[in-house]
Image 1 (cartoon, rainbow, N blue to C red):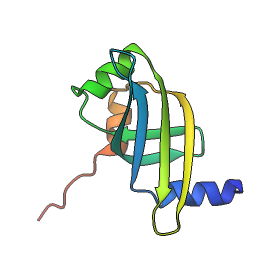
Image 2 (image 1 turned 120 degrees about the vertical axis):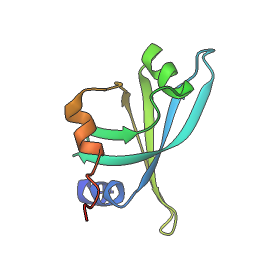
Image 3 (image 1 turned 90 degrees about the horizontal axis):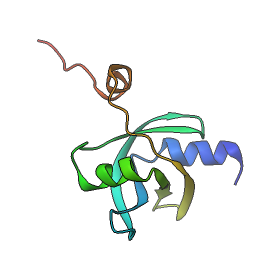
Image 4 (image 1 turned 180 degrees about the vertical axis):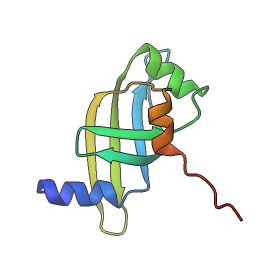
Length: 101
């Protein structure tokens, strides 16, 4: 798969699956919205920051993201370190202002 094909797969994936280790060291996966990408190196996920998987990622940031196109039977797994970000600049990337009438 070329870099362009990888980017296209990631761009057409509305969801991703994040893999992580829970508090007991067991592997877990969770389907999440992956709404913003910066090339192959940065992905912003929208999820509930009070959830157990976020708490686990705060303790151990080792994680992977799996993107897929089920219709084309294509998938890609990226591994790295997750960082929980709550700053306004990151929230602004996730939130869209509603239509005002």
